[in-house]
Length: 361
Image 1 (cartoon, rainbow, N blue to C red):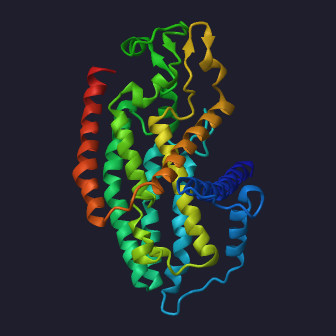
Image 2: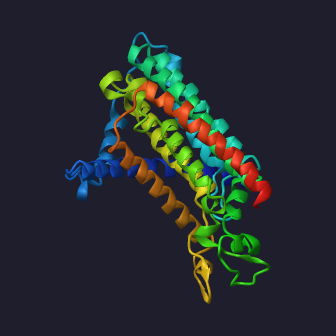
Image 3: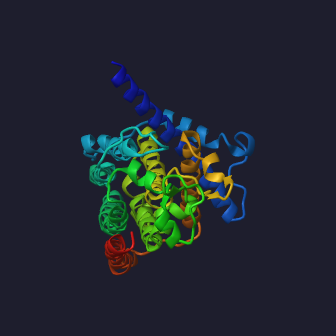
């Protein structure tokens, strides 16, 4: 009984976190967009408008759940739940700190991208079930976009897996906290701790510095993650000027809220995967330098969670910044970028990872 109770509590905690982050994310995005556009954003509901998002959620809770007369009712009602559950289940294999993960799967990375692919089915169900031309156009655009950008994202991820030699996200995270003496010498860092031939390399132990070509792989992954999340400049599935709201045009009330909850949860999830694979996961960026052991002071479970959240929020902030800075791409531009630029570069990164693993590491 305690076994099932533990996982029930973890599931509730992750759901509560998703809801809290969505509230924070919507408010932060409103303020970020206001700053970029030289205006104030929410100001009236609560101090600095902090209660505005809560008021919007309460409004959605009491709004009527309308099902269009010509809609496929079963598909229409199930779609928002499937979209959110697919993203929500992705958090099951994510490590937050040393030894802190809902489920420490050996195939954790594979599981995440397998379960996230179900979101595409939910989007297609939403578009087709709505029986609305704008919704079906948005759903088809979204499916084509997500499936296409999974290719460069997958190659970029394989580049990391070839270096790490594992799909276990805890193992990939742990590898980015230490440097061998030989590797430290290669990077110009000396062993000051004499701790069994290993030092805590701080930021220099992160994957993007352990194998510098992974910086390119990280950029490719980040661009692809924007497309996977339907974020600008890849938000053509819900282009307001063309498709009203795309695949979620007909949704109201809590069904509409679940679609947006999934979007902001997806932003956090893809950013967290990027942090784990490329940016040191829960490891500190501070190295041990001489007698000053900065790394030793800023490691552990508590610090691990802090570093993870800080890194993820920085990436989420960049996603918001990009949305309110860059114009939306056309469909042909989006596909050209995917197949003619990102995919060849990601494939090249994968080849370099193989050479790097054999000759350097």
